[in-house]
Length: 366
Image 1 (cartoon, helix red, strand yellow):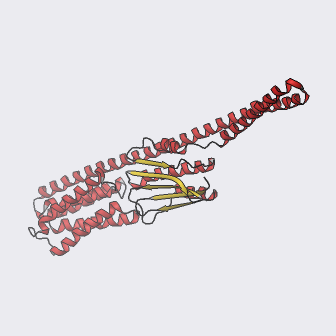
Image 2 (image 1 turned 90 degrees about the vertical axis):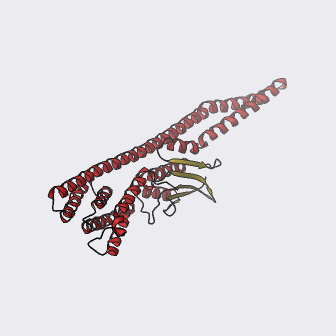
């Protein structure tokens, strides 16, 4: 299972602080302007909404959760004007908003939150300098929180983009290297066939003619030379066939592709007995690449395992991460393209977002 990470622990600490500053009202040390059970329900709604705004996948649901959190925080702040520290909860909503709305939206929300703090200060004290200073103080805290959180998110996105580009570049390099090795093997096989093979064929024909013309003691050496030439011709033809059919080392290719990815451990397991065609090799390498990039971008996982092995009369590549998964996974352009590629090759591609996220691609043969 993946850990919370620094970002998750920071969010948990903010929620703990939010609950702590609300304890006086919850314990009866301060009387809110609304019934205390209702105040407790609003606090619970605020907590659930904050968690949902940072965790749910759909953008509309995140925005709705943010609205609920903001409205609940305003009511909580205004209903206990004598509790100055409770204003920290509006800082929490400002921080969470950076995950939901653009930077300008978060700044606008900080201004609106400051209005709620200002109104609570006016209800608490007639001294305008007191509530004005309090409002200004919390406005600065919100702005600082918004900018620092936005910077953190942008750096996180940059790291994700860099890791994705790293995988794509490594995959392109692996495929290019395999293509170059295949082309070199084909060139060597053609050279063996066209030069040595043809020369040996001519030699065997000449030896065959000489054997028919030879008599006496000259015949045995010609027979042995003919046997040696025919054996060499068979060996050359066998070598040419092996060079043309030699499979790529897909284990090494996959390991090279995932080498050096920051923040993600990738385990590779390939059945060494597999004999894949060139199109199948490319399809499985591309599927592994897509699985790795999706894990980096969406899964928030720390480990990914890729297995390539025979499954009955088929060969299956299974990529499974330890991330958050998806209850109703929606295929993006990359996986849709992979599914079409596998269907064209007579296979299939399945995804499962239950326990982590799993991609399974199968092809006939191997």
